[in-house]
Length: 244
Length: 240
Ligand SMILES: Nc1ncnc2c1ncn2[C@@H]1O[C@H](COP(=O)(O)OP(=O)(O)OP(=O)(O)O)[C@@H](O)[C@H]1O
Ligand SMILES: [Mg+2]
Image 1 (cartoon, helix red, strand yellow):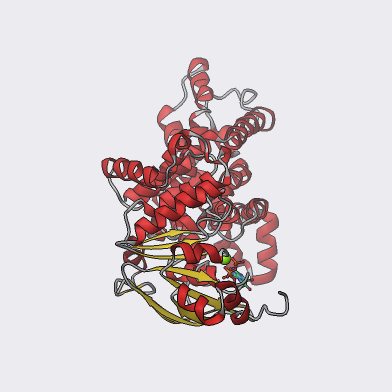
Image 2 (image 1 turned 135 degrees about the vertical axis):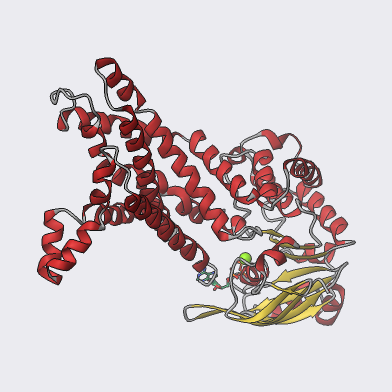
């Protein structure tokens, strides 16, 4: 546990002392604003709820969070510092979890920075604040899944850009499995039942109710499973380096 | 016995890097690893430190099998990787604190340990400056301090004096000699003079195999100088 916290603190420190994280968060805020107002038409809808805002989270996270997570392991491998880390008597899972939690904290900070929107809603009208709050929590949980994907891809390569591209690809697959263009492909290839099952396993599908502030245990379980799976994969990939 | 290495083997693809290395090490010994570039020194040290898994053979640190109980073995050894990779954006102080805490030390213990190790490695003023702004020699010393933090009985140092100026080199050698009195050390180096100056034992590795394991003076007497011994044993006669 001491090792996990030490890794977490170091990772967080390196996020806040290098400019990259600030740039990513700024781009995230800009993108979320652009989508919410221009594409989602938050004010045109004349409703005081944040559904148009949350609806874009999967799409923006899909790019933003792989960018945040890409350095987690790639940078260690590139600089060689991974040799220092892996010759310390700390279990791999503690290193993996510490790094993951640091990146997740950056995601949480980015979400907190969207709060002015929520405040504005309360000035303009009377939104369902409990629903918005739970939607925020669901979004944070979903962010964890995207970061776990990014962490796993980062453990595969010393090149951050490669890690980023791989993570966006995998993230896209998990996000959009339910979209007609993707599920049509599966329907053609594997039959309708399979396409249905796949669609239900997509992040978009799982976040659908959540973005309206409805908490479904199934979805919570789904995101936790994604996080655990990809962090487990990260640990395997990190440990596999010892064999090479 | 501090360290027992038995028939260690490692290959990368078709290339055999380490090909049946065996030796053991006791308290009070300072072993110098010698050998041409690509001989397998770093690979051997990495396997001892638990960074790489051997394809075959066994490493035991205080009788703990590294393959079976890696963390427990790693608690008992200090390792300086080749080139001393570090986190550039940290200062030596925060970096060493991080290493100490990742090793499981409490904050108070870590603070004491970092002070002591920084002093042993003579970090001086450099301890507050970002690592990326430090000279190569100081970075090497930060790496050395990191290896000494938990006061291990066994130290594996991969080219500890590489890139140091003559003054720093002397001070690191003094440190190594001092540490060697009640610990066991393995240092790799390309400096034969260094082996003669600090090591109680020289192991020459060529093509992944040990070709000589003796006291430096013995080896030098046998072949008419350590340099001649190195050249004959590693097949470098023609180049000379
Ligand atoms: N990760 C790796 N992947 C592939 N080959 C490797 C790897 N690490 C080492 N090798 C190869 O194994 C052999 C031994 O390398 P090693 O680094 O152990 O030599 P060395 O004795 O430390 O050399 P030097 O004096 O240059 O540091 C070399 O042929 C090297 O190319
Ligand atoms: Mg080497």
